[in-house]
Image (cartoon, rainbow, N blue to C red):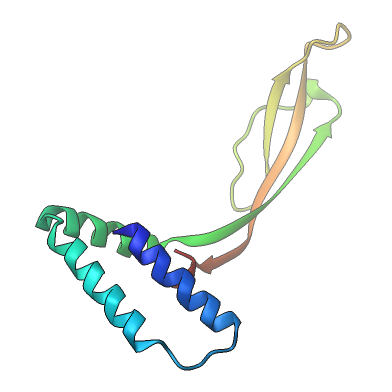
Length: 122
């Protein structure tokens, strides 16, 4: 079934790239018939599962994060802290350096882009 859908989709993308506005009615009808035949072979539960997951994927977003890290000097004054709305977090890391046993890293993570995923990219 998915192979048929991909074949039809590739055909129409190629037509779109070539600037063909007119659609090929015969090809569309053939695709429609083959897809219907495939759907007739899928159980009702499988159809519901596929539809549910497709609708869920429409709700997903493309999200981009920006993460910064900064080494903190004076580890003896630092303590681990989770990031919150007001400030970034601090994590203590074990060191393999003989001079000091651990070091602190300040981190901050921000969402810089959150857009709905276009249906044509699913």
